[in-house]
Amino acid sequence: MRIMKFGGTSVGTGSAIDRTATILATAQREEGPIVAVVSAMSGITNLLLDTAERAAQGQVIDPAEFRWALSERHLAVVGELIRDPHRSAEVSSAISALAERCARLIESVQVLEDLSPRVRDWIVSFGERMCATLVAAVLADRAVPSEPVESDRLIVTDSDYGNGSPMPDQTRELVAKNLRPVVDRGVLPVVTGFFGANSDGVTVTLGRGGSDFSAAILGNALDAEEVVIWTDVDGVMTADPRLVREARTLPSVTYAEARELAYFGAKVVHPRTMQPAAERGISLRIKNTFRPEHPGTEIGPEPEEKTTNNGSAKAITSIPGLCVISVEGAGLIDVADVTARVFTTVARVGVNVFMISQASSQHSLSFVVSHGDAARVVSALQAEFELDLLRDRLIGILEDPNLAIVAVIGSGMRGTPGVSGKVFSTLGRAGINVVSIAQGSSELNISCAILESEVGRAVAALHEAFGLAEADHVAGTTAG
Image 1 (cartoon, one colour):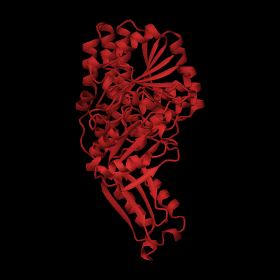
Image 2 (cartoon, rainbow, N blue to C red):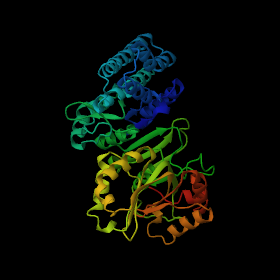
Image 3 (cartoon, rainbow, N blue to C red):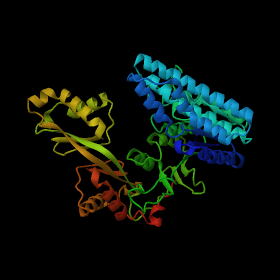
């Protein structure tokens, strides 16, 4: 059995859904049972979030206009792709009913001028609900037995609205009860991505990009052979092709490499996707809906016999729009539990930390956050360390904006001498100043913070230095 997940661009237009339906119908016919997982049509989640937030601010939302904005593209695809008039009327009615339900929720938010995390998750789930209904109908119109299945009947999560985590045992039970019988009947289920439900049955989303994650969760619960993530690129690349024209598609990466790449800026796959797959040894594959003939990138376990490549790194990635925050002071070593206090404070304001660096003298602790979160973090830290600052036990809490992280990633770096030297000598020759440095204990990743304006030059220089444009280098490690 294979799980096939299709992202927003793969279901974003009538022609894209036509391709997706062809891929699914062919796979079901030639490869055996398939479970599809779909995202919302591209732009729909943003429409839902923007409308809900405007309603919470007291702006007047016209229900009829909103219903039309939400359903228009879906109904246009019905007219374009579904030939059977009875089925066309049936699916149009179902899509309109979902839009009406969502509009009533928006009206409630507008009246109360309040958008709780629970209600936000419920509202944004409608994009996937509508898309699954549409894609299943298109398949059925092509004589492929298919039906939509809402994932809050399958995936059990905690109650962390906006960033839910699955409960594997409970999920496995629901999948066996509500999804496996659909597959056993020879029906191709089209499952909504992006969300599940807590133990009370309340919708909880898995975070932006969470449809990848939900596909892997279902693959785990079904003991699938493979999870295929269909998107609009050929696979995981050695660098962002917008920064490096010579960037190449990697034929394979390990789970650990993919996790690092996703976390440090590669947008091809959600960072949490690898965990459920790795638990069961399920291969992930990234493929391009618009070039299905391309083999894509396989993500799998570390090979038993690893072939090292001559550059040791696998890819260069980057995250722009960051800020380094430093807690500094000659007496920092004497400040009780300073590290714990810093990161407890950061966690309390709900901010993600991308990188941490501490001077060996313990007089300086630096970490990297998104630029948009920096002001909140600095304010919270100033409140936490108010007495220490007054007593001059800390010099200050400093903010260094307009930065980016550049990360060199690859399992081949583990135990390879001279990799760090090559990274920093390359940046030095390019005249790029390094603000902060970090290397994980796994030796999979060397990260450094630099000026955001230098990202393009840095990524290109490192890509060239490690020979990542060379085909034999790119194919150096095989997964699985």
